[in-house]
Image 1 (tube, rainbow, N blue to C red):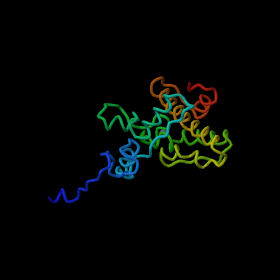
Image 2: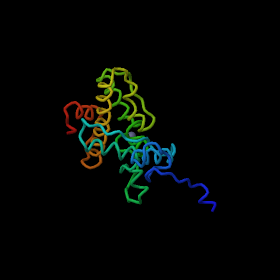
Image 3: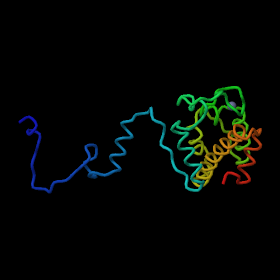
Image 4: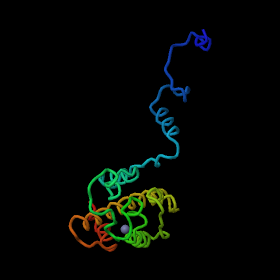
Length: 188
Ligand SMILES: [Zn+2]
């Protein structure tokens, strides 16, 4: 009786609706919205796909954003037996995602050259998510924002490729090599 006391009957047709959104009916959009609200702030921000850069670069940035990328510290966390977790580019710190792309001395130099090349104010990042939001600081219109957003994703790809060159091919990789790869479209 208690359950039924809340039920009201009407002559309208029956319909489904999501409990958070009884205006728009049962839509995938409203379910997604409510799931995003429920997961709180502990989850990384949603990755926005950049249509003009290669898919492989997008997938890499998406995985890094979720911290599901095979940096050495992440490999150790998965119990992979590796001789060292130190960063191969600088050798000074453990190779974590934030270090590799934002704090590593090689990455710092790359971002410095990159911002001069793009004629934007110097870019400094504390976390990987700052890289994905850097285009919002460029006040030169939507088109410029899209270009910078794509370029920073490609820079991350080039840093990762440079890192792989040092790890797997024992090739020394300088900030100039990484920027060179970017400018010569060596990432494609
Ligand atoms: Zn480093």
